[in-house]
Length: 344
Ligand SMILES: [Zn+2]
Ligand SMILES: [Zn+2]
Image (cartoon, rainbow, N blue to C red; front, side):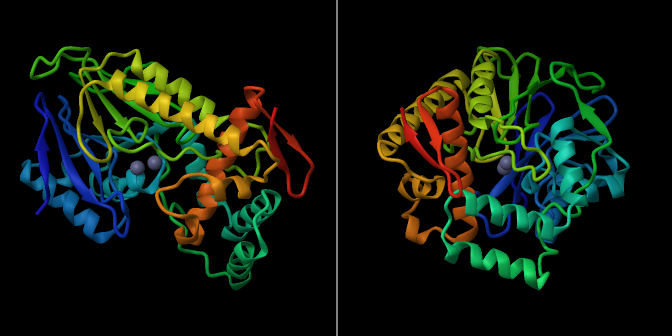
C-alpha cells in the first residue's frame, strides 16, 4: 500500500521507499498543473520503489503516462533515480540545475576505475590508513564496479534557472538555488496562498536542503577533473540564510515530514553548524589530518561501528568543515601527503 498525503491546493506526496537505507523513504511530490501533473523528485531506481510510485499515482487517478514533467531538486539517486523510467513511459521532460546535470553527465561518462583511483588518492592524501585504502584498490583491480549508483541516471532535458519561475501552466513555482548538499541543489517556492491559510509566504519544496530532524550531509563536491577549491559548507550556510528569509508558511521536504516555522529550523541548523565548527577548532589545537579529525568528530555511532563506505563520506564531511575553517581564517594547512590542519 502506497502512503499518499493530500497537502491541499493540488499538491500530494507519495512515500517511495529507499531500499536498505536508514532514511526509509523519499517523499515524491505531485503538483497539479493545467497541462497535467508534475513530479518533484522521483525516488530510488528499484522495482519496489517503482511499484510504490505507480500505486500511489493510481490512488490519485493518475497513470505514469499522464505525468507532464519532473522537477528534480538534486542529482542524488533517491531523488533522480526513477526519472528515466517515468520519462520512458510518459515522454515527460526532466528539469535540473545545470551544475547537477553536469554531475549526472560526468558520472555516466566516467569509468568506475577513474573514480576509484581519484577516491583512493584523495583519501590517502587525507591520511586514511592502508587498511581503508586496500579494499578500494582491490575493487579497482577486480573491475567489479559497474553497480555504482548513477551510472544509468537520466540526462535532464530542461535547465532549472535560479530565480526564475518554472514553466508550469497555472502555477507559480520559483527555483531557489541552494548549493551545499550538492553544487546544483534547488528548493522550489510555490508562491501561492497556503490552502489552509497558514501565515507566511507560500510553500517550499526543500529537497534535502531543509529537513525537520536531520542535518543533511555536506561533503566536498567531488570532481576528479576540477581542482577548484570550493567551500560547500560555506555555500550551504549561505543557502540556509537565503531560505530562512523567504518566510514560507510550510516546508514540504523530500524526507521525514512536512513542517512549519522554516526560519526557526534554519536558525537551529545555523546554530548546530556554528557549535560543530567551534568543537572542531578545539580538536585542532594539535595538528590533525582530515582522517584523524573524522575519527574524533561526533557521528550517529562510534567510529569503530561506521562501515567502510560511510567512513569515506565522513572524511569528505570533515574536509568540508576544514575548508570552511581555513576560509574563515580559523585554521591553516601544513605539510603534504598527508596534509594536517591546525587551529590558528
Ligand atoms: Zn541528497
Ligand atoms: Zn535525499
